[in-house]
Length: 120
Image (cartoon, rainbow, N blue to C red; front, side):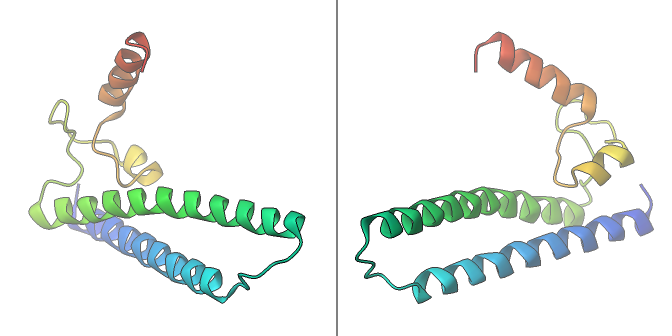
């Protein structure tokens, strides 16, 4: 991978990180701004359902943020784009589709097949 491609992935990852952080801030602000005294049980249930859904999304984004930070660290260390399984370069197309990936498509396929056969 050349330096230009690497910088493109860095910019993409930084943009993703900033978006996740911004969305988390908006969610926190919205949740604290919502009225907590909702007398109608149906309305209260709807608000709680929406809040739980929002929290699940934020939890998934928190996990993604961790992967983004790890990918940025791999770029800084010169290890980005190499498979943790076989050590070979991960294809550019795969990185474009999933810039936080740590496995080439062959190793990821093998990992998923193994997990399925073990019932995970």
